[in-house]
Image (cartoon, rainbow, N blue to C red; front, side, top):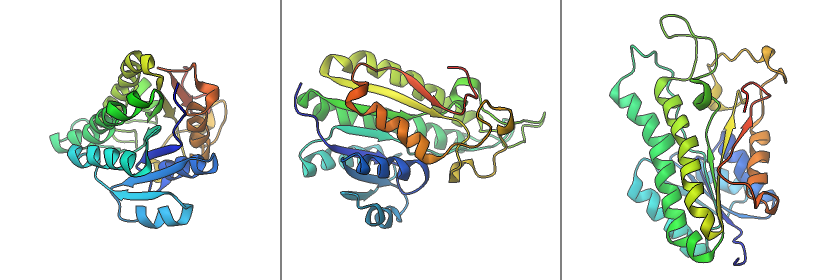
Length: 249
């Protein structure tokens, strides 16, 4: 195996879970490139002392590929990719529009697939080492969490979101079966109710969980830290729940 690259790229890292992941990886000694559609990604990069910040909409696949290839070129390599960028519609099924469907599928699933492709080919394959981590959701395991009324209201994550996250979990397993031959692992992290901007407005009933509270973005980041560490070298194709015990693995 070649010497592991310390360069990591984290999508959706201007705030929330993505920012916490970037901060943790920096603390672990990695050079971290932030990528986000929001313009305050540059401010975040300064605040957490990231190596670089890129303002990119992950749904623009050509721009996404160019950003990943550029980061690998400018930093000499790319060893870690964490796909955190996401959107979460909460429309009822009756009110779901094709535009809302494609927004969540394109952001949460399609961009994840092609970001992994760009990172692996050629960068991780050529260096014989890489770590891919896709941020999924336990909603992708159980069809959404939180109460729901007969009319589809109640704050549960929407049909497009849960479909995309279910796809991301199986995409992770599929990629893992191929890239392991090249010293690359691919794993998913499935958060449950996490105190973050995306969870705002949702109803989750955390009092019934084995750990009866919201999780923190830092706790999700801890799972990512493990999955890119040498201690996880024999772990691939898995989906690690960070959900207070809410959903059985």
